[in-house]
Length: 66
Image (tube, rainbow, N blue to C red):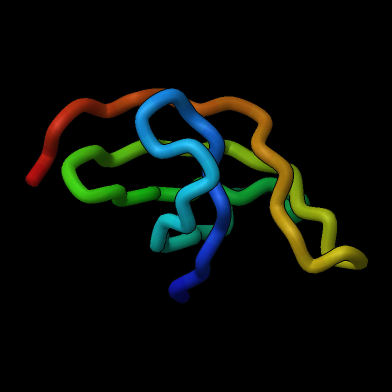
């Protein structure tokens, strides 16, 4: 599934990045693989379905993968 989510970080502040979301074994947690122009991130985020948004919990920079 493809989603769009505004990601805040030093390199791409307020940019909207495309990412693929994959459910983990925990129902309220998703592992998000985010791709910017040159960088992939893995983001573990709690879901707030009522607001239909995803709040960042932690982001790990995976380095250039293009």
